[in-house]
Every structure is written in C-alpha cells, then in structure tokens.
Image (cartoon, rainbow, N blue to C red; front, side, top):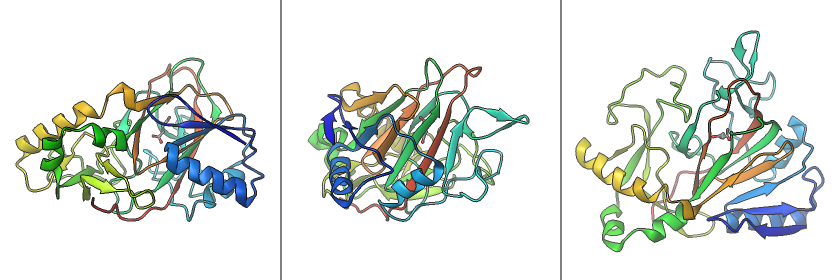
Length: 282
Ligand code: SIN
C-alpha cells in the first residue's frame, strides 16, 4: 500500500489496495491516514453495495441514509445506502441532489450527532462536471486572525435542516428562511476533534445558519466574515471522478461541495455514513 498526499489543501491517494480484502494492519494504516489527511481517495475499486457497507462498518456503526427528496428510501433492504444521482427511473429520481451544484456543507450536521465519516463510491460519472471539492476546516480555523478567534469562544451555531445541499426541501419540513425558526441542531462554532485533539471551525452550511444569542443582522455579519475564509482555494482539493473511485472523508473537520453537470448525462454514486457523537467544544 502506498499513501501519497494530493499536494492540495488536504487529502491523499491510497494505491495498491483492494478494499474488499484488508487485514487489520492495512486497515489500521488507512484509519491513521484518514485522520492525518482528512480525505482519502482509492481508485479502481470494485465494490458491490455489500462490500461498500462491509468496508464502511470497519469504522463503526452506520447511520441510516437521509430520506430521498421524493420521500422514499433508496435501496430496498439497504437503509444505510444513500444514492446520489440525477438518473430517472419511471419518471422518478433514483437518488438525490439532481445535476445542479451542491453547495458547501457537512453531511447531516442538522442532527445533534452528525456522522463522523462519509464515503462516496462512483458507479457512473458524467464526461464533464460533477467534481467534488473538499476543504480543510482545521486550516481555516488556524488562518483566522486572533481577534476573530477570540470572538468565537463559547459561541454555538445552528446547522439548518430545511434544505439539502442541492437546495431541495427535506421531507416533512415546512420551509422558512428565518434562521431562528428553522429546524436544525446547535453545535459549538469551534470544536475539538475527538480523535486528533485539533481545533476546527464547524460551519456546516451557510443557508439559514444562525449564531445563538445574536440578533440576525449580527449573526449574518459574523457568518459572512467566517465564510470569507471558508472558501479559500489553498485549503481545498477536488476529485475529478473516475468509475471505481471511493472517496472517504472525515465529516468533522472537512466540508465538501459538488460542481453542476449536464442533466442529460448520468451520474450514480453510492454513499454511506458512519455514526459520530456530539461535537465537543474547543
Ligand atoms: C454529497 O454531498 O455527499 C455528495 C457529493 C457529490 O455528489 O459529489
């Protein structure tokens, strides 16, 4: 097994490994590389859904997938599997997020205990577009000026549960754009990673975010100041997908987004998410 940094703001590629056949030592090295590099890319994998789930379970118990935009769960009998796809079958999408841009977010952080990791496996990809970009939230916290860091101490942020990253309203939610009223979960704005002990900015997503205790205008101004750091390209890395790519990310100290692609082309990705715990304050 060979582990090489992407050379970007985070991420490494792991080569010469078949994820269906991992001994304990190889799994231990992958686990450590995931904590060190935040995002890992494994190319050329051949994973059935059960092999994807078996590899995912090595990191811990799985979360059930969020419900699809149509209200259905995706794959009969495999409730852990989240399908991200624009493909229609009998006029209904087989997955979520369509073909538009998916904005920066952390998976399922509108829950009190968001997943600690997610992995996405590429089954079909469009010829252009649909890249997924990741950003390093440790590096963003480190880059904040000290006076701004001091302002964040003890604050909590609400991560909105109204919209998914594709802008679709979640099943059963009455939409509101008032960030004080929208459903979601509060988390510390600066968290300590439970495994590495490092501090990170925990932003989740921009739409309907709200900083507890501030009036909406002050919350918006502080969020805008933080998001100005959270889109800096030196902290990012993007995957130009190939069929058979598996990308695993630490969902606590990264965010991700996806480029739009031609809706006439097909993209089918299968995702799992590994249960996490409440995010610890710094
Ligand atoms: C996701 O946000 O989990 C999916 C990202 C993608 O479609 O690349």
